[in-house]
Amino acid sequence: MQKVIIFSAPSGSGKTTLVKHCLETFPQLSFSVSCTTRRPRGEEKDGVDYHFLTPDDFRARIAENAFVEFEEVYEDKYYGTLKSEVERIWDEKKIVIFDVDVKGGISLKKYFDDKAISIFIMPPSIEELERRLNLRATDDAETIVSRLAKAGEEMTYKDHFDEILVNDDLQVAKDAVVKVIENFLAS
Image 1 (cartoon, one colour):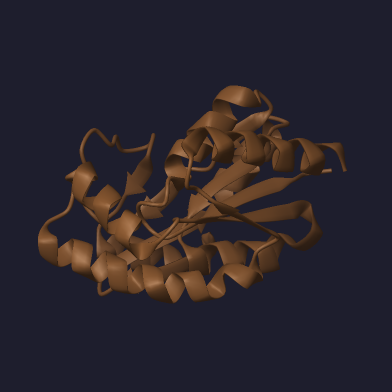
Image 2 (tube, one colour):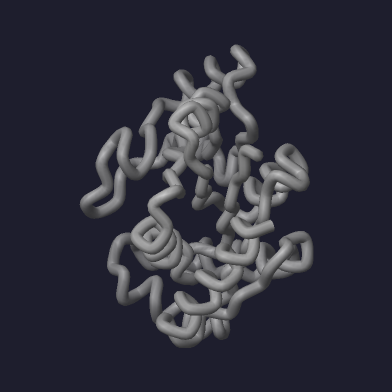
């Protein structure tokens, strides 16, 4: 059966780190490269971390019904999953792993239903999340304030996910996520 694994979390919760750990641990997984209209951060590469599109290009793909799911997270800041990306991975006989925002995760779970497991990564606290975002040094102070406000809202959606993991200790979180995925792959 074709399966998908969905990771969602507020920005700075450690979701991307845990997804990378899963990709290193499970060779049968393949990362779904999402589309976004935001600018690359740090060392991000087009086609590897994201497909970076202009807002007009993104809207054109919406009109073509090219997305499994998409959302305008902030004004003119779109994120979405291309149907062609999922098909590419399934054609390789791999299992899709998603790293998406919270509303995208909920949409993907509804779309894929029992083919999917959705995992919500919780920060230990808003204060710790703020510390991590500041340490990451990829956003200005105004953006961090906006991300923290959004994180508070996103955490109210955690119960829409199959699994909730608190990332307080990275090694503990890595071990927990491996167990969750092993159980899902065995089902």
